[in-house]
Image (tube, rainbow, N blue to C red; front, side, top):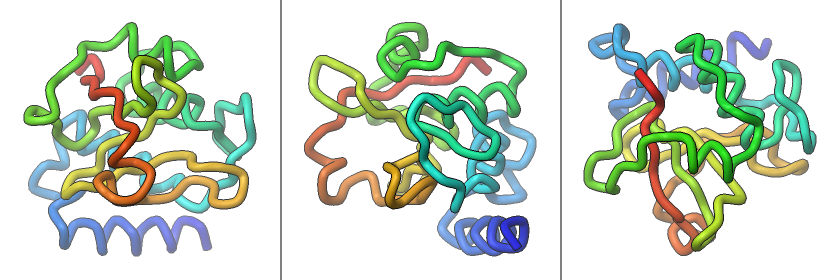
Length: 147
């Protein structure tokens, strides 16, 4: 059932320019596709998957699965260890960090102004709009995964 939901999400998001087959060979698209397969899984603090995640455990697991690179399990440490990029350069597969001067939450940019992230215990892994609600007021910065 979860695989079917993920396939439907990937199909739906490709309509908006995310995880499209035309970009299937890029690392960023691979990161997005793998992240989308985890939508619906639960959020559990201090967990690194594959059955449940916290925010940095989610990004850590997806990046390792997509690239073979291992990053630490901490949003703040991930932010410090990656190449930071300006908002104008963000592309699918990049990471988005939240809270001013600190990184307390992290998600994966999916394209078209959306992120995939392990939200909280009530919502689990979800897709949200980056420029809506809480997110738009708490962006710390963006980082590129080593590709």
